[in-house]
Length: 129
Image (cartoon, rainbow, N blue to C red; front, top):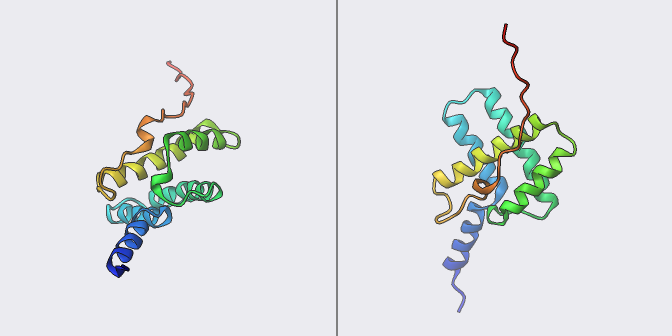
């Protein structure tokens, strides 16, 4: 028997985990938290790159983002970005994923970035005079 309410609930459930909607909600949260315009733009730029890559890999739902997928994305970025640029994208994705978990947007969801090591950024030693 067809149950319209169950179908509607599944549609809303899918919308809640749809990556572009989540990224937009995250940006709204960052604005509401009082981050500077520049910080919000930073998240927008870095997460837009992430969304484009996800789309190219047919990833549309946050539940499809795995630890392995994130590692492959960071390796992909390393081909065209310096270590600092890769680290910046990593930080943006980490903040986004933590927000999903902290706000309990998806009950019982496990943040896949927790098992991804932060990309190494060589920092030259400072000169001591």
